[in-house]
Each structure stands twice: as structure tokens, then as C-alpha cells.
Length: 574
Image (cartoon, rainbow, N blue to C red; front, side, top):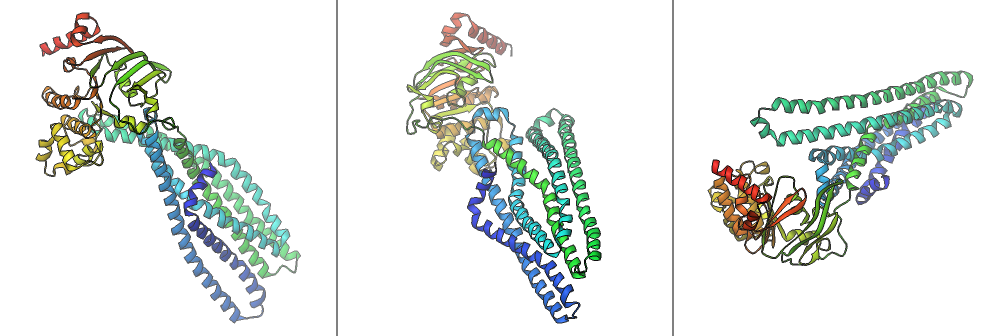
């Protein structure tokens, strides 16, 4: 972990070196005070040399002014280095998240991922700045002041130094408790973020069902857990702080008692020596205190970096090195004895079928039967457990993800639109599309006139997830996006099932235009919309139990006929 953390310093090595040199100068200037104090009280005060006292005072003032400038440099540029490292980690994490498989997002909540990218990396940034600076400055101060203490009186210095092992021992004992407590606190913060993200995203549903009190109760559960874990962390920190500060007080006791005895027993131990010794002990204790107080920040930073690495160590989508990258797929699809399991549960069992280029094949059946899973396997979102999926007689595992997915357009029931303008959402289908192509796509999706009716036209902001648009308008935008992409393979996953009849008819016309000349897989709930499909596959409990045209399946008087008759009867009753 340490090597990976240090690697983020490499692009900033020059500035980091200057930062450490400035820290070194700050430490050395700090050592001047006890040296000058000893000289003044041992020589200039007894000899009443006012001139040299003033000169030493002026020199010390100049050094302190230089130290002020150096501290500004360390504080400013040190933090800039930390922020740039944080930005690089955030970029690396986002790029890595983009490469993770579908299954990762099935198991991890968005709010928790966001917490790692924001809160955790902020703490890593603080550690990146203060860690080297504190260890460097404090290390020099501790070593330098102790060496100087030895030059004043080595016996008294060793007495003082006996308190250090006690301090280190207490720090090591308390450190593990603090680490565990802060790690638990991190998890609770992530849980709160996840709950908050979910509640805010679903605020309209909450208002519709007047369940605001329920959401508050759910949030308070996580909030109370946060208070509990934070209290536990502060308890560990309090025990750590109070114990170490007690040891710090022992330094003062040892200094007063030991110094007094040495001054009485040793005539060579002058007042100047004693004052210099007291000041040097203060310089010795101060960086130790800084290091102790730094432990909490160190725990936060290392915990945050560890959680960052947990995401970075997640395996990306597995792709063969020698996959075909430059290919124009035609759209012949074949499932060859495909089995698929997810988390040890068998979802699809021995699925075999073929779709010729330009054919329309519908998948029907009860919810949870495996229809959507079949659709997700075609773009290689999930890896099949057994068997093969072939497109144009090529195993999809031999085609690179980019080439494969560029050849597939997907229109789903739950349309996702990005926060932005109508144009930005349509152009997502082809980022280099011209205005003429965007207009044509919107016309073919039957949404062009609606867009023109808006005050800002294509530049109209649609709000988060397209909240300013109706369900039909959002669906037509997603269809325009696919028209712009112009893929040879089209997947319609219950694209009209959530719409009213009037809107469905309008969108169905756009879909009929969209399917022309494309290999199309339609997952349908309303069976009346797929009567003209070349073939209908009935999927039940992960298996294809019936296959044929609409009329052939009705004649079999099986599952399809039962489903169709039920829908027909219900529509008649309506």
C-alpha cells in the first residue's frame, strides 16, 4: 500500500523536494532559539554586553521572518500537492469505475461509491500534505533537540528520554483501537450517503405516498449508528490523547526535578544551561505532541486510501488481449447451449436459438423468467457460465467490448437521461453527430415538433434524470439517441410497457421505423405489440419452452396462448 501511495508523489517530485527543503529550514531555524538563549545567558548577560544581545535578537527576528515565508510556502504548495494527488486518485477511480462489470453495480450502492470518491479522498489529500511534512519537520526537531540536550547535560537528557518508550508503548496500544473505530465510522458515513442519495432521488415518490416521516425514520437509523460509531472513535481517541498527554507532563516533572538536582550537585550547570535545557525540552516535546495529534489524521488518511484501493483492486471487465477491434457486425445472433448463473443461482438453462440478420424475435413470459438476462448477455455485460453466444459466427468474447457494444442499441422501459440539455442527451448516441443528424434522429423518433415548441429548443435543460419531461417524451429521446447511433442490432426491453395507449401508439410507430433493416430482440409485456414478429420465444424459469410465430403458438394452446388470451380478455373488459 505504501508504494502505491508514494507513486502519486512522482509527478510532483520537484515541488515536493522544495517543500521538504523548506520544512528542513523551518526545523533548523527552530533549533536556533535554545542555542542563542544559552549563549545570551551564559556570556552576554553576565558580561552586560547589550549590543550583542540586541544583535542576536535582531538576527532571531530575521530568521523568524524567513520562517514565516517558508511556512507560507509549505502550507500553500504542500496543500496544492495534496489536492493534485487527490484529483489524480479521483480520476483514476472514476476511470476504473467506468471499466468495472455490471455485476459490481448490482452489489454496491451509488452513495457508498460517492463517499469513497469524496470524503475518503479528501482525507487522503490531507495525509498526503501533512504526513511527510509532519514526519520530516518533527523528526528533525526531535533528533536535533535531543542531540543538543546531550551537549548540555547527557545524564539529565537520558532521564528525560526514559519517558519516550512509555509514550511510544501507549501510542502503539491505542493505535489499533483508534484504527478499528475510525474504519467503522467510515462505513457508517458511506451508509448515510447511500441512504441520502436514495431518499433524495426518490423524493417525488415519497411525496406522492406522503411517506416523508418513514424516510426520516430510515435516515435516523443510519444517523444514530453514525453517532454511536463516532462516539466509539472519540472514546478511543480520548483515551489515547489523555494517556499520551500525561506522559508529556512527566517530561516537565523530570525536567524540573532532574534539572534542579543537577544544578545543585553540579556547579558547571549554569543558569544559561538550565534555560537552554528547558527550551530544548520544549522543542523536544512539541514535535512529539504534533506527531501524536497527527495520529487521527493518519488513521483517516490511511483508512481512506485503503478504501480507495478496495475499488482500484476490483477486477475490470475481462477482455481477451487479441480481440477483434475493427469489425462491422451484420447482426446474425446465435445462442449455443448457454447456461448462466449469478451468485450460485442458475438463471438460464441450456438456451439455444438463432436470429438471422434483419429478423425480429420477441421474448415473452412471466417476470423473472430470464428475458432481460438474455438481452444483457448479448452485449457481454455478464459472462455466460457455459456455452457460447455468436454474432456473425464470432464468439462475442473474441470481439472487443467497444466494437460489440457500438453495434448494439438498447431501448429500455426505465429510460436514463443525464442532467443536461435535450441535445446533449440525444448526441450521446453519436458524440460527433452534426446538427442535421440530430434533427433527423429527433424527427424519426417523433419528438422534433415537441422540441421546437420549447423556448430553448434543443438547448432546453431537462433536469435530473429528465424530471421535466413526461414518460413518453423521455422514451422518444432515448429512441432518438439510438437512431443517431444507428446500430445493426437492436434490443427493446419492454420499451412501451409503462406508457398509456395513445403515447404507446406514437412511440410504436417510431420503434417500427427503428427496427427496419435491423436484427431486433423485443422483450414484450403487451403481446399485441409483437404479433408480427418473425418468431416468438416463450421463456419460463430460465428455459425456452415454446418457439414459433404468433399464430403457431396460439395453435399450440400452451403458455403463450394462455398469456395472450388473458390479456385479450382483460382488454375487452376495459
